[in-house]
Image (cartoon, rainbow, N blue to C red):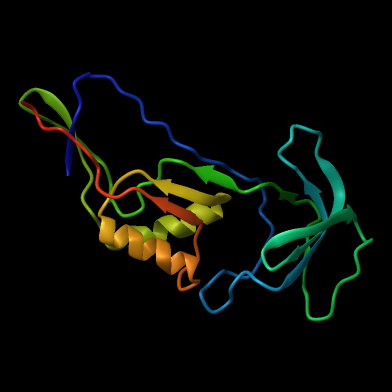
Length: 181
């Protein structure tokens, strides 16, 4: 797919986040879904409201959702729950990437007929790497603004049913582009 730009300058907005020292947890796979009960103890919580960080907190996660936040050591570890030591770590709300081309390969910038072009070929190896990379950087929801519809819908369904681990996905389908007249 080739996109032509009428202007020689354009910007690409990237949403990225670097969360310092993420909490060590077992790698996510389809065989170990992120459901059940987890207690993260003695972690600093950033709640996303603009308030100061909440230090030394315990966070109880039930079926993938935060059920309780309290002072460290005050939540009893339920039987069978996973316990994570969050000392020196930070817990933040999930991030949203609103422009993630999940199925397209590396961008190639070039020129054709004196106009700049951008080529992003579909690459079957890219989606799995992209899903893992997004999660590793704290992205829990992503929107794909354009790519191969059959592959994107299958990817979205695989994530939503737990076959693949990745952020929640919204997909748009083919990129709409007009050719030079």
